[in-house]
Image (cartoon, rainbow, N blue to C red):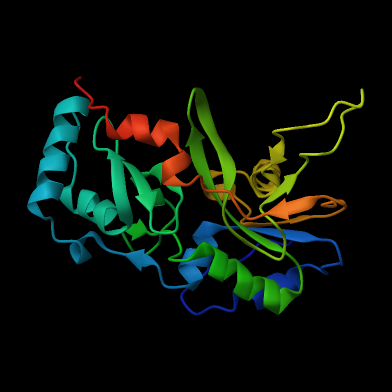
Amino acid sequence: MEELPEISESDDLAGLVEERVDLEDGDVLCVASTVVSKAEGRKADLSAFPASERAEAIADRLESVTGDRKDPRFAQAVLEESEALLTEAPFLLAVTRFGHITVNAGIDRSNVPGADLLLLPEAPSDSAERLSEALSVPVIVTDTSGRPFRYGQRGVAVGWAGLSAARDWRGESDRDGRELGVTVQAVVDELAATANLVAGEGGGGTPAVVVRGWSFGDHAGSDDLFRREEDDIVREALQEWAFDG
């Protein structure tokens, strides 16, 4: 796909994509949350987040842990973009209001010309739905995120429309005829990660990638991607854990 220009608020993102690629039936469009956020006016300045006492305390705590000065207004922005914080040290692990769990509520401080911060879309699946309707293909809104137990980041889906989040293999058989009992494949995450390999990172990133030739297949689908709090034993453990470094 031809490179997209720098996106500004109220730009017709769907139209800009349509000008650059001939989408076909069966295509899936993966779009970086950064350009979706920019089109939706989610740039912000730190001055918009006067620090509360809690934000001041969080910034002081982080500074004592890392040795680097932390701006309490950034902590306030994370608080305002979060439903809850699972950890306040050694980093802010936030539950976003749409269910995604990520560091700093996914707030970005790079590639944000004219502003201090770029917030995630307020409702990424709604954003994906609007793009999907305009372009007549499934759409995944992607972000990069760290992974428990591993170094490095990978692409993940934060919103999607036009396809199920997961395909359910339970009840089907493996090559030996054994019935599968637990396999539910998070295809939107896998497609997001694949797209991220092409999109890249940093200043040379490509914010929209078309996946072509992939098929969901004849499987049951599910939109369960973000684990429910009552089913999440890792989240439960984090809520009972306190960093003592």
